[in-house]
Amino acid sequence: MGDNMLNGNLKLALQKNGRLTEKSLNLLKSCDIDIEEYSARLIVTARNYNLDILLLRDDDIPEYVMDGVADIGIVGEDVLYEKKANVDVVRKLGYGKCKLSLAIPESQTLEDLSELNGKRIATSFPNILKSYLTQNNINATVVEISGSVEIAPSLGVADYICDLVSTGNTLKFNKLKKSFDIFSSQAVLIANKNIENDPDKKSQLDNLLVRIDSALTARKSKYLMMNAPKNSLEKIESIIPSLKSPTILPLADPEMVAVHAVIPTNKFWEIYKDLKEAGASGILLLPIENMIV
Ligand code: ATP
Ligand code: MG
Image (cartoon, rainbow, N blue to C red):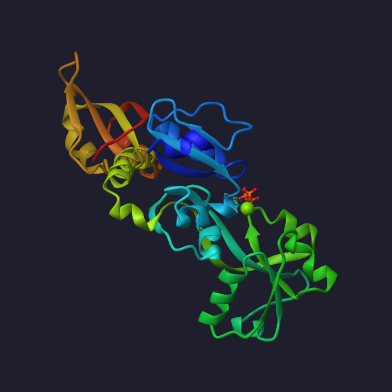
């Protein structure tokens, strides 16, 4: 590590190899930050930005950021709250979404939370589970297991489990079923608390945040283009869910105009039929790479 640690660059901790790695590197790419090949290394410097990247097990990221080994980090809220690290959550990043759920044997039912009283629940998230139980006044035993939590009920170690569930296939294989969710998680950008008092680091973080915010905003939006008869313009403008009024451009045909607008991605599939019915043609939806609002 040596030299890298002294160069004054902002230090970002990322998961080295796991579910958040590719999406985090993609986010940096959307910020126009290029990372060199890193396969066997613990620390790399961005090619075109003053940023050092520390590649770590995700479990270690909250503590490294808390201790200042890294200035900032990207980690799942599940790991962050489990580790109870005292850091600032700077941004929710919108990826790495998953749920921590309670699962019970297929043959059983669970109608009311109070039925958890007196039960043993196996989990690798003891802190999150315990605080959930406390908040709901449940007195259950939390059995901490570091991996393969699903087998605990069949081994007789626990009655139920609390684990990250994605497809439910692992549960099914172990004759378990999901009962309810106790915690929703997504990837977050965290920062060391002392950055606020370090003007140089603070300004580096603020500069990075401009790029991250622009990339995150752009992801939620698309550039919508279409041609429309002039006489249906009013109707079409009323359909477009744009924040600002759309751009109207003349076309060679004097009766027609081009309409351009930035819209929330998820709205497009609700409005394209209405647009067509109102006379729009040649509808195009284009990705936006960056967006400063
Ligand atoms: P490491 O070797 O770094 O300790 P890990 O095996 O503990 O990795 P991963 O399985 O790679 O961790 O998961 C990393 C994070 O991704 C989790 O903490 C969670 O926030 C998120 N995650 C978990 N499951 C999913 C899923 N199915 N879809 C999206 N994100 C998920
Ligand atoms: Mg881990």
